[in-house]
Image (cartoon, rainbow, N blue to C red):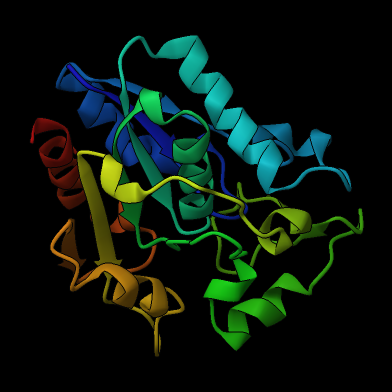
Length: 223
């Protein structure tokens, strides 16, 4: 069976993957859902030093602790930054990459570089600590502020994503207006090395289309 390592988007903890972790585990797979430093039950760790490198290290440590074989790395939204960095640091531990309506960075990109102006304006909001971007009003009540430094730090990578057996992008079609993830989707949609899916669902695909997400993840692991 496969080990899936799941990385959430901004302001969310491992709990956001519950609708897919339950069926994946029921099917016999191992699932490691990671809460990044400074978010959710780890919100007490938020400070000026928590950045993208911190979150990459979180996931590398989780793989080292829980996985005995190369994993399927799954990143939602901002999580695409993290899984790309993880694939660069420990390529031997990664079998496949799945970007769930996520940014797909290249060397030198920050998350802020890859989204639209409205998203970037949100990144300028500040919570009481001065270090976090507060969750948007419509987010899950469990959402907490997200470390601002992580969305502003450029990613430094040298890995060629084509070295990995599968690269999958899942694009959510149900956005109010243009999706801020469209530029990332456009980077890969016509590349035959990528498998792309479009779902008639809102951005939080794990909540709004869990059965489809599970099907796509299992397929990514099987080929």
